[in-house]
Image (cartoon, rainbow, N blue to C red; front, side, top):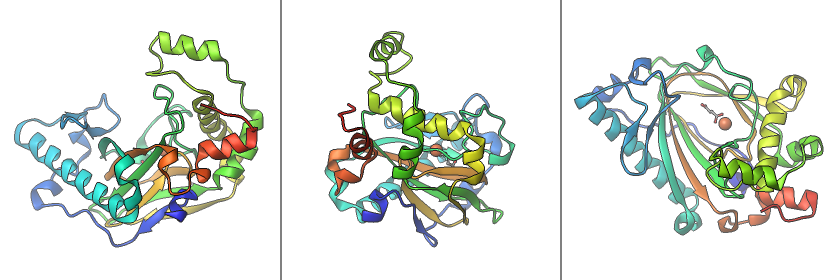
Length: 267
Ligand code: SIN
Ligand code: FE
């Protein structure tokens, strides 16, 4: 837990998600609807983003649901103290080859970033993620992992555009955001965009390349651990949210780090 809350990526080299032979046949790019980025299982059990019907759809739903249960059990084992405060988010299956995706710089996850979502303000709530590589052809999922959040904040907060409260209210009124974008949310988006748009930072900032082999699992706070995905295909991902106050050490959260640096409340 201290490593996780310090923004490290926990690596479980031999923790695989077992597939049945029938499920192995779902490892194809065309199970995804071209209009969606990922296939996701919503909390109400509805599958979104899939291009398969009938029996295959039921099999895909069951497979993603089983991953959800196992990912949640892993978090309960690693961090039992989180259990009463965790909030489940959708589970995703990512069957697209990373190298072949064409995207704008802002949407391009091949650039180092911390996760922050323009339409979904979270007021400091954490984004905890469990990933597992399912690739049947031995291909790793290759990530780059960057510098500590404190260093990212020190570098990019001074360059951030100021928060404008009336703009945040307008974005909410226009339903661009699902709730009010707080100054914390604004800053996290500024860090995300500042990192991704800085070509020199992408190339020259402290980083390590980490190939996650098939049959391995990794866990991190993706709003804190700087990451980029360079290659790979077929991965499962579970997101869980946790209020920063429910961390074992709330002073290690991005919210606390940013508030210390700026010496004011951000939510
Ligand atoms: C991301 O959160 O940036 C994507 C990670 C991945 O697809 O491996
Ligand atoms: Fe990301």
